[in-house]
Length: 181
Ligand code: IMP
Ligand code: MG
Image (cartoon, rainbow, N blue to C red; front, side):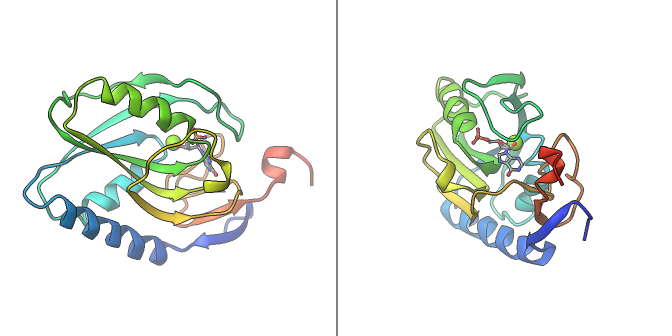
């Protein structure tokens, strides 16, 4: 285990199992349709890559980046699009693929931005969910795991752009962001 990790919440095997289940659920729900998966960079890139490989209906993918987090551990109000989609979403069945739903601020604003582009449907698929931290109400259709209020990294999730490469999800030791041992 990495020295900055306090404990492992989900091993690579556990992640694989749950992501496969989510893919199967999406495949069942979207029979006869061709959903467009929109991944929010950068945190969701690994989840997205694994998820699409367990989806059996034809689908397309696109990416978007928004800023809400600086280098701290809590998000602010309104979000800004820093990288927009390449494709038009009008009339499409959209699945937004996120790494973690925390305060809900990011997705609350993002879903409004997407809705204004007239997709035929929008659903949210998040790997992790911290319900205790919710500030803005967001409707989630697919949720991998609910987790307690702790700062987690790995499997795409970062602190200050680090730890994304860990193959598991772990709780970060608080001294990393507080500076206090
Ligand atoms: P929200 O706007 O507060 O819901 O925050 C959503 C974004 O904050 C996620 O997409 C992550 O990038 C980041 N985030 C929230 N909690 C964590 C965490 O525990 N570890 C790493 N990133 C997090
Ligand atoms: Mg993110």
